[in-house]
Length: 222
Image (cartoon, rainbow, N blue to C red):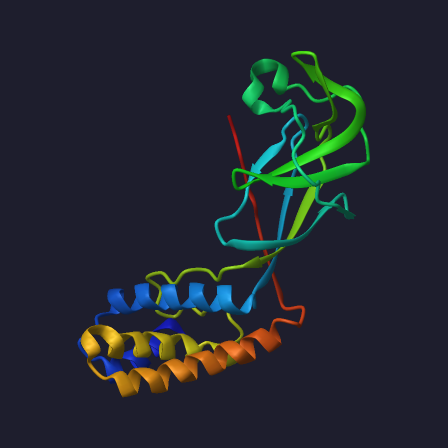
């Protein structure tokens, strides 16, 4: 179901709503649907940079399922290392560790993905020693994540990222919200909101499958 079809469904109930207004409402509905169902699972792929710890996560990522480095699952680190030998630390931080390790971990800090290796007495600062250094080699990063869908743009032929059977549910959400504004028709709002929530329920069931897409993560530069 194309964006134009969704817009036309909404305009059958709210003829005064214009295309741009409906598009924004559809994007809000899609974000809500993805967050409620965790339906869209995407794979984000990018190479690491030696000596860099932090990488920006794509804005569409809602939840990280797992991370692989060089095709191997790596665990999430509990807590954060006490020393950051990273790109925030000037010229020295841009230098990769002289000793590498295959014992790697990930964690999240300030909404960024951090990648580290465990090496005995890897770095020291102010009489403190840490066994964790920033990843020291170029390796493929693969993030498996729950994601938002791609926003609708100006192309009326654009499809939603949602599987076909769930796309009409977005129009039900917009129709329901339209009837709620200024109490235009509370009963009609309830009818279409129920339709939307029924679609959400089915979407949650479908989320147990391995529906995937491919995307990219954005790297932090300093």
